[in-house]
Every structure is written in structure tokens, then in C-alpha cells.
Length: 340
Ligand code: SAM
Ligand code: SF4
Image (cartoon, rainbow, N blue to C red; front, side, top):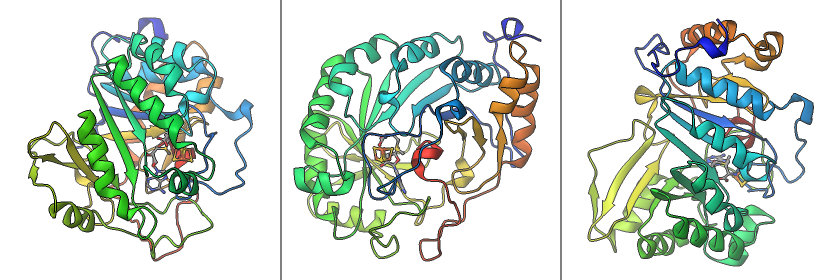
């Protein structure tokens, strides 16, 4: 069956794993490159994948179309830094038109948002997550190694002006690095009516310069810190994802906690990832994967094999991750490769 004959307007729910979990959410990394070098995400000197090994924009769109035809309703475009890839706006425009795709969202470090926010909104992107770990320019520079805080803040203002349905900030909190910034980040989010998620660092890839176990700062500790000045009301609705949300009383802001260590969220996992090289990853914390690039390139213009591979891949989706900060990382790929 060719891609043109796939029933994309009547998606099937075919992506169901051995534990009865249905995959409805795809996170796809469109580049492993980045203009930042965040200390928890990358080494200072990264070797990136040769361009010929990266999926083309056409291949990315093809993978997304087949996923949607199999029941995926939400796609997050990520990286590396997705907004540094040439043609990203056109790609998002194409993805935004896939029949059956309910949500097209993006995660970015915000460095290019000031000029791209409007075109992205026009392309059909509904929600954006912007990573922001500090509101102190020096600390921001230390954490990202090269990032300019003011550029990112200007990007966030541009995104607010562009009228996305929802903006969310993501902050990875490290003990004794940016832990003291938690209330300030929340005040910033409240003043703009946007959401904020705090993320516990995950042991993905080797990073030099800090000890992950020593710098671990738990979601519970953050919640305790916040309870001194804010009333957090539990929100019943979860997005089916790893975040647990709390409404900050008297504000429009919800605070989320992504806590791979203190709250195992695998039982409600509804997602898979595709790396920039076209490797389908069934779990962030395991290496079970399928090479989609080989299939895409071996069968141009015929999606039958790709479709079967995606359905079959559900059989190897692991039950859960086994992250342990005290052990040497067992996952050697960095988050930038995985598509965070
Ligand atoms: N470059 C974009 C950005 O920074 O938003 C998108 C890709 S980045 C890999 C996606 C998210 O992963 C960011 O919010 C980042 O903070 C988070 N991240 C990266 N490495 C991480 C790690 N080791 N543990 C937890 N979160 C991590
Ligand atoms: Fe780049 Fe995002 Fe990783 Fe930071 S977290 S180095 S911005 S990919």
C-alpha cells in the first residue's frame, strides 16, 4: 500500500503494547545539534551525527504521517535545538496539515524564538515548551555554557505576543546550582500566566563537570520549598504523561513535576521517540529500538513495511525505565540525541 492510499483520515488504534498501553504521542528529534551546551544534557565538545545520517525533512514528514495513520494524535518536534534546522517552519507547516493530528507542539531553548514565534504559530504549532533554568544571566550562562538569557527572554515575549494556546517553561533543577531560583522562576511564570515544569535530571549520556547524584534535587524538595510561599492545589487531570500538575492558587499558572526518580510514571506511558537518525526508541530509559531510516530508504514510496515495523515495535516496548543516579549511566545517548 503506498502512502497515498493509507487511510490517514481514519486513524486506527494499532499501536498497543504488551502492557495494554496505547501509543498516541510521538516525540521526534529533527536534529541532534544545538547552539547551547547545557551541562546536564551535553558534553562541552560534542561530536554530532554526520548530516547524511540524519533523516531528511521529507523522511521526517513521512514517518509522522504513518504514525498518525496508526493512531498517534500528538506530535512534539524537538532535538537538539529544533529551531536551528533549516526548513523547520516549512516542516511544521506540513505536519500541521496531517489529517487526524490533533496537537502539534514544540520544545525549544528559545534562542531563535524572537524571529520564529509568529511563523511557527502561523504554521499550526499550538503549544510551545521553552527551557529556562535560571533568570540570572551569569547562572544561565553557566548552565547552558554559551546561552544568552536576554535572547531567550525576548523569545518568550515574542511567543506570548504570537498567541500560542499555551506556553510552558521547563526547568531542570540542580542542587546548589539553580535550586534557589525556583521561586523566582515561578513568579516569572505567574506574571505571564504561563505554566512551569520542574524536571529531575536523568542520567542520559556522560556529562563532565558535575556529579549527577550529588546535584540531584527532588521534586518533593522543590514542592516543599514552594509551599512556604504558595498554595499548590492538586490538579486531577494528568496529560497522560510523566508530569504531575498543581494549580498555584489564585493564578493561571500550573506547576508540573517530572520526577523520574521519585515518581515512576511508566505505567501511564503513551509515547515513543524517534531520534534525528531515525531510530525508533520505545523508552527513554532503555535501548530497545528499531532502525526506521533503513526501512525509509529501502522502501521509498511504499509505507507498508514501515507501518508493519511500527506495529511490531510495540512488542518490544519495555515496561519501565531503571534510572539510577548513583550508577554509571547505562544509557549512553545524550538527551539531545534522544529528543527530550
Ligand atoms: N533544545 C531544546 C530545549 O532545550 O528545550 C529541546 C531539546 S532538550 C533535550 C528537551 C528538554 O530536555 C529540555 O527541557 C532540557 O532541559 C531537558 N533535558 C536535557 N537533558 C536532560 C537530562 N539529562 N535530564 C533531564 N532533562 C534533560
Ligand atoms: Fe541544547 Fe536543549 Fe540540550 Fe540544552 S537541553 S544542550 S538547549 S538540546
